[in-house]
Length: 280
Image (cartoon, rainbow, N blue to C red; front, top):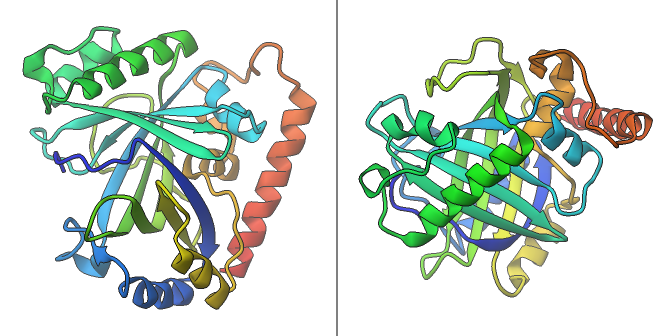
């Protein structure tokens, strides 16, 4: 997974669909895209993704999503396997209006704790010589320190990814078996101590593109009667399980935020999530 094909800026359209629709979408998509190399030889054409999300004691990043902050972001550490020799990627996922911007930099595992302590990795600790990755890690540290963020939640899921055979401008992913668990340390193991299923048997479909909206995306949405929705594995996972499991130092709300308004938005999100799961 060291070969980085991440799109730096893109648009994402999300849909929550039942498994039978996901299988039909797969057959439709294979006419335009090819399966990602990491899933080609695996069961269900999928590989496992692990994300360790960072947040403040008050879960300010989580509440930013619940509250619908315009330019919100998430901080996470991504890894793909238990192997201690495999890298860990520091990622910033930022929403700017309707666009998604991502920055990410990979480091060797022995350097992770130093970075979380606020130190920048040396050249020998990086998995790539691309200067943008070091810039991404530097920005990650700045935001982490600003938020006083620390490991909070481990999210794992199986990803089926379809990519353009020409470039990385178009990508379709199907995410299944999304689980979340509180995690306040950096173990980087596949084990979840207290997992909860976030979306049940439903599948998260994401249509991603960097340039012009592909015409066949519009046709796909029409054929399968897709309805665009929001689906945050981190925020919906915490809302579904309960924030109390993810606070380390007692329940506190970010200073200056409208607690009542945020609670109303959280209930709305939980109602939507329960409705989606009932459909599945």
